[in-house]
Image (cartoon, rainbow, N blue to C red):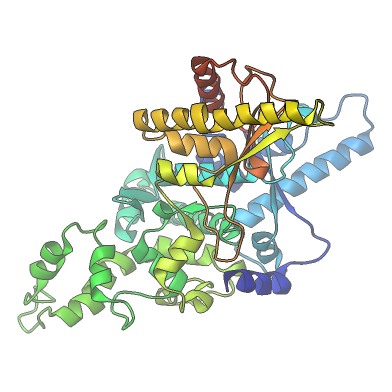
Length: 483
């Protein structure tokens, strides 16, 4: 059903001849834990930072013709303009944004404008997964510049992030600007644009749900129900027990802090003739007002971003995003399983997706069948022994280890869902006679979810050597380079 719906959208909105969507991202320094800064990425494109045009295309040498220079400058400026339009555009009369949201994105990571093209990874899927994975890692800290300070758009909650309340956002903006109404409106528009852009990146991930997992922590169940299904507390198909479970990140112990706190109390404390809160009014009015409608500014922008070109969204917050019309009949639990990767993973989860491929080689295999049989036996022993020992021991030492290992192999730090009938998601452990050389660092090919290990001599029966080489390789997995 999901695949059919995405196909119908592509048939309607993807324009022939426009091709893939190309974006250039400024790489983070090697010491950074992520491949790029989401904050700088949004700020630069929103403000149309002139340096983006330099970054997008390496300047030609002085002896190049003026015509070549002009063509390169035009190409760079077009790429920057199109990226800004995809992220922050709000006028889609030509249908370009809808086309872009449903098209394949190609990411280029560059350290500087003069970086040689040979040093830049060609995006066959890996750089894009790295980009999206690092987006979700940094989402909780995404902010807008207001005066001399930064105002966060999301709060940290139990199990995920929470869009900031309208009144809190307004207060923080006004307290940091203290100037004209126009400046307050500009800051508010930036907040809306950033949140809408998050929705568009998320939508592009949803259409590739089997490879580009979005962590559940990016959208708590109460917001997922609203945005993806148009289902709000008080609806007849939203069970009250589920509502109470879903508002725990917003109101711990809701039976005490919401139900008992308000039951039989006046709705309007200043009105002597006010009605009293009862179970129906608490679920149908108080809870939606307090936890949903109070965040209508940013939730509405997420809905906009998750609606193709913004045209398929209802004007009413309660109707959800453009996806809701198709997804309302799908249970929330199923949607979460399909669209969102597991925010946490166990050792068993990781071991279950590992699939060894033995005796691989870039050219023709050399040696007799008996020789290869001996080699494969050694590789099998290494897979079942040293590799699984390493994963088991490091997972016990470091709670982030499994996430780092999966990101090294796939470019994404979440395990995606594979729908029934589809090939299950796997991380290939390839033993290759060509590269890497015996004792050298493991290699990752994130475009095809593969970790490559030496095919012979492995690590000379030295577990400590393998451990050290693996650790050094993982330490570099926050960057996407040609290795």
